[in-house]
Each structure stands twice: as structure tokens, then as C-alpha cells.
Image 1 (cartoon, rainbow, N blue to C red):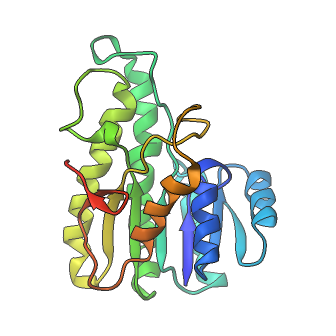
Image 2 (cartoon, rainbow, N blue to C red):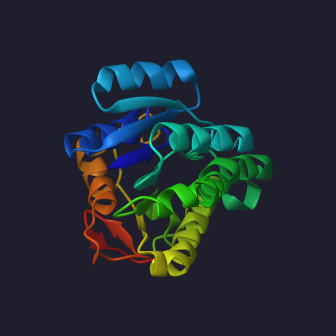
Image 3 (cartoon, helix red, strand yellow):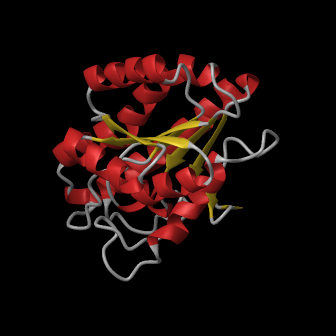
Length: 227
């Protein structure tokens, strides 16, 4: 099984890659900078392969697809983990919309274009899974304030994309789900959160679902949560 994890050089992405390796997958460790991808893959060991990939770059995405095609011929799992701008410093009423647009490029359009470009490789795989790493901050039910507007709105959009892709790809047997890892102690989440391994476990669960597993859902710790 071949898996691609974006933003895999640190935090949740790195731990997700590590757990997928432990589950027997070969893992493409994607990072914006080649050195970070290479160093992380070397640290993770056998079965980890570096991949330079800025998800906002059409050229990078095309090059990644070609590299996967040449080296593996298919893809089984795509984990859209890369994300930016947990913007605790602003509220919706006065948000800098340039920050929101920048967040959308990474948090929404990046995963969307990756799916579109890699779909032929996924269709050539087996037990195909797409996991969009989301957040409770993107849950309309849990939105009780206008804080973190760029992050919250783009994660809500990613959830909507998850539903649409799941419907479109159901006939292909490609399961598409959104996963909230919870508040995790990462560079973005800050100190005080749960261990990274616990947050990554839910992502890996969605990436390794059986063929009759759910699709088009939003989960935290393997349990459905409200949109």
C-alpha cells in the first residue's frame, strides 16, 4: 500500500506517516522544502520516501503525480494534512481577508487540486482512502464565536469538499472522510494539548478503513461528530 501524507515533516503529519509505516504502508513524506522531506524520511526509516510538495503549487502537484507514477504506478491513500493560519489573533468582524485567502490556498484549494490530479493514480490503487484532516473549529455546530476565522472557515469548506468528493467517488470504492484529531500539542496547536500519537491515530484509522467502512463522514477518535 502506498500512502501520501502532506505536511509530513512535523507534528501530526510526521506521526501519521510513522503510524502508517508501522501498519505496513510505504509512505511518501511530503513537505514544502526538499531538505525537510528528505530529513524526515531518513529519520522515519525504511519505507519512507521524501517528496517535495507545496500544495499551493500546481507545478509541484503535477511533478509529485509524475514521480508517484514513475516510482510506484499507483496511490492507495492520500492524507491531506498540510494546513496554515490558526489565526487566534483575529475575529471575523475585523479579519484580514488576505490571511483568509492565503489559508484557503493551502487548506482548501491545495487538497482539492491534489485529489483532482492524483485521482487517476488512486483509481489504479486498491483499498483507496482520502483523509482530509479537519478540525472541530470547522464544525458549524461548534462555532460559537468569530475567532480563528481564516482557519475555521477554510476547515468548514474542507468539510464540504469531503462530502462532495465522497459522493462523487462512492462508485469508485474510494472512501473520503474528514477527521478532527482534537486539540493536539503541535507547533500549531500549542502546548497543553493531547499527545500527537493520539490525534494521529484517528487519521490512520480513516486511512485504513475496511472496504465497507464509512464515507462522507466527520470523525474524532473514530466516532462521528456534528458538521
